[in-house]
Length: 256
Image 1 (cartoon, rainbow, N blue to C red):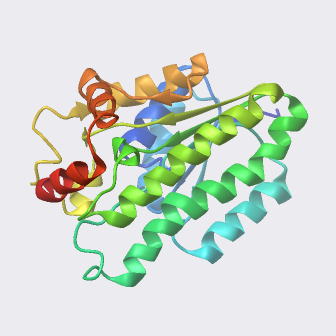
Image 2: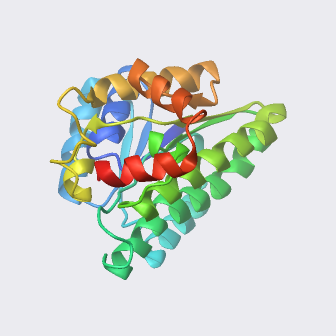
């Protein structure tokens, strides 16, 4: 049986896992991409029991050109029909730009920007030919402001937001929905990886990953271009419109 799949990157934990669970409950066939093969296997078993008719897993390190390129070649060679792409994989690093490891910062750009761009460009022609499709890119409230102390991460998320808004307009006539999910602090493994687990950037009342995942998929279903889950995040982005950028830079630097 030939399926139309939903492809999710960063699917072994956090928002990617929560969205996979929600889609499995809808009976969606899934293609899951992550670095941790053992974790992916366990997740796939869970999702099959939850209702997904087919779950395929791919161990891919999106930070490595060769690993990503080989995965793209595999998708094209197998001719898999992907009608929904969820670019969820991403990470950040906390610290001064000049002090953080250069290779680690380039890896951040590779995962947050290159992988998202390449996968989107690879799968879009098929969606346009079929006259339908959906793309959900996960950015952050960081996309709306500069981020001294996490400069590269904030910059990558600004790229994701800008690209998503542009594609939403380009692809509207082709029946393709494009949404940018911009969560604020959320309880996932992100903060621990970034080194922000004990900073004021992750308050105790941060949103839960299941709630954010539900809001993201609901926004994609409705064709909403930018989704800010939770009233605090909506208020933050609204206020940023009226605050001088110099002030914003100073506040974010102090929070870091």
